Image (cartoon, rainbow, N blue to C red):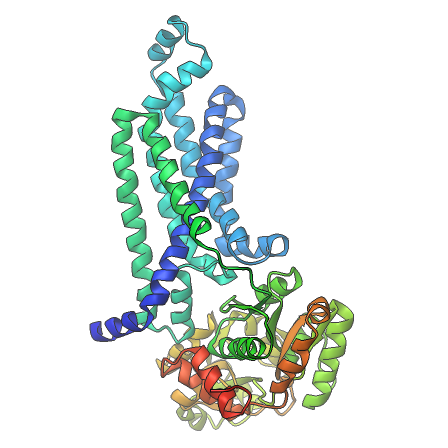
Length: 509
């Protein structure tokens, strides 16, 4: 176990140090903004005590809202990346600082305040010379609490492209709960929180002697750390940002897009893999946070257009998706690849043989005895469990919802009996699963194709012919094999994408 972890660390140490730095940057920026808001606000509230409790109560309510819900709410307004993450993390960090600032200043000994007033000090001088120096250790304690909260929550921000150690944790979950990858992200996140807490504890102790000076010193150091990339980073902004959902397949495809575009043009491309579920990535495309991402024809029709596929023929489905996305969203859907990563209901050979399961229809006879493991997305989609209930009249007694990367481990361990799967998923090979036939054609064809806003295509018309080189290429077996190389052979998506393009003569060695 330890040997495997060390091996993973050695292979990914460059990525690890980069994500640690990203995690630190986002956390410190959020903490600084929370301090700048909460400390002055806490001071003001001590002078207007009537409104203090309602405002502190409001900051407490903000902390009860699930972080993922806050991030999803912010995407339509601020896009993906660090901006919505920092806004959400700042909101989570306000309460401890605000409450400690208000309480510590309010509870300064009234006799000391009276003495300061008697010496001729006005309200401002009394605050800076008496109240703040005495209250500073308690304020610093609130900052410590806020910092630990922010560092822990920052891992979730990776879902919207904000980077950080959450990327490694999410990658581990997507790889079937790869414990080594999860630990590679979780351990540094915990150590980062501990180290920062120790540093702030030192400032807290100093504040008992130095008072407000220790607070100023801490803020200056934090600002210098945050500002350092601006001083040393001279990288120019990319021309195109290509995003992707979670998973090895989207990561491989966007690397193909990048390699082809940069080989055949002078454009600079930045990749944003692992942006979460369909709704997150599509929202990012709509608001311009990304310019392109690989989408499936069936998903475009059912999820984005909210229609049913008019045919089970892949060419007709693409035609319907292309026309619908253009009319409804003014988006261009380029030529689809050959592979059909359609939804499927999968189970083990042993379970299928035991209950004589060959089609989804056959599940009716054993629906009360089955435990289904579905992703949250599949469970809520018409081309998923909702459609299975309506078209196949199924209503499983036990349905467990889980992240995509967890379901293969769940069926391998016998925790669930059937799962939703994708036809090109690598674990179909690794676990030797079988899929049940879909005689009523619930699942439409799902061919991957580049989706972009029309304005992107107008600005860079050359990318249409470049990306259309992949049209009609990549079979189911080829895509499944490439996914397998990334998921189980630990090849990088960039390496796998490059090897395929070279093999097909689309890229020079």
